[in-house]
View 1 (tube, rainbow, N blue to C red):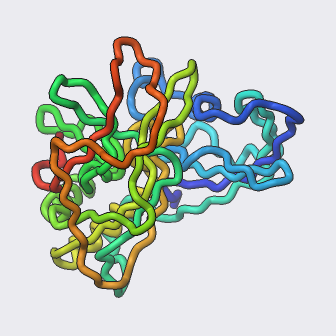
View 2: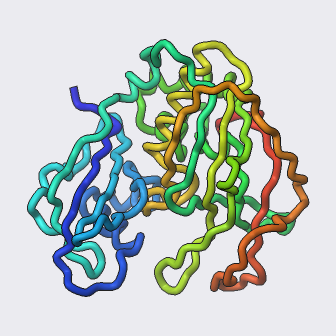
Length: 319
């Protein structure tokens, strides 16, 4: 049985003597060639995500992690078959030295099978690359959102005419790619149980505004930092669903542009039982301790600003 979603860890050697740094759009372009979509699907959510970008290890070596999310359609090209075949990423020529499969659980296993003797009730989530999330201000303009509720962190599912038509993030991966007979019931369980998930800050790892210089002199605004998630109630089914959400969060990423390497997170489950610390932030209050940054160059933009607001998990997952 083929394990999906699939995740690979790739070790590459850079053959270029001098080159500008690898950019997210370079990586995105390569994977669009590896795993192309039909023209009518090109603007839709990708079947894959990058867990960050190639990370230099020294001696011209790079480490890269990739995930294929589809449960039915295999990737058109398997990275395991590219060992020794140089790949161009921007100005760099990198040859895969090794490709290791690092995820071995199917959606069916993640959604149905018991999680083990210990229930997971807490986790620490840390960003590895900027996480891009937006919300709308009073004028309707999209602005960076840097204090995400659990619902926003885990993504969204979109329905139309009674059926699932799309989604993003951890829950979106289940809605779009898991076996439909399993996905529907699991999403309803999540909807009923995840209302009890609470967020709190991680000491010394405050969520902060971050900017990333992108193509065409654009600046992508996101956030960096850590968040603790605690499940305040629920039975064993709900804690198992919570553990699955955390696993999917690492696989699928959080926020926008995960196909370009943004939104990569590292999740550590926590076994201690300290109560969650609630942080009260008024909805209308602006972030007072954000770091100075340059105003992004956007047509018609005045002053970009970030918001941090209190949100509960209540409501429906089906936006």
